[in-house]
Length: 280
Image (cartoon, rainbow, N blue to C red; front, side, top):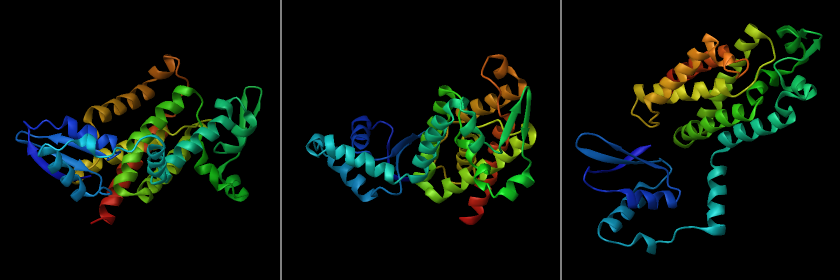
């Protein structure tokens, strides 16, 4: 995001920001000791926002400016989604893949989309090694496990953060950055988890840790554009520690792909460093 207005703290912007949200204009207001700053997406016309603010500041009635509703609002919503192809694709592929495996109940589809084909005989699981995967040319398996989820809570939690944080990355830095981050962290976390525990795992959590780590460290190495609350990053690190402690499994949340989470976190840090070097 980029700053467009610096105003005194005494200026109440609630009516104006409500107007911006009604027009689906992404923005954020930050405060320091002396002033507040209005930030907007680079894809929004700064001149138009400043013009609207001056109109409002001079007593203009914002309600007289047409707010797109009804069918037009639906068209606008579709247009916004079309500008977020990577975010939307991650969400839709997760929903489709999770329904195909029926939250893990359909062993046939699970075998097709897991990191490697497997066979359960009694209490033993038999699965292919990496050389067999390369020989078969089934390279999609290095990515496909990120779309598999095994409970409603699992998929809702992951996709919420993809929508909130992943969408911001795509809005501000473009779809290629988010696509590269999801691919890099997905392959790295899937491969690492497979080497540690075998093929029976899934979920977007490794990518979620990656997008959070990426946006958090980016704001500390460059001018802030994502504004991830430190408390959120602290919570995710606490969640990671809980997973390794075994407390989450003890609480009945099932087996946790801790390696995928940790590698996803590290992948996000690495991607932020790479993007920083590329954009110098």
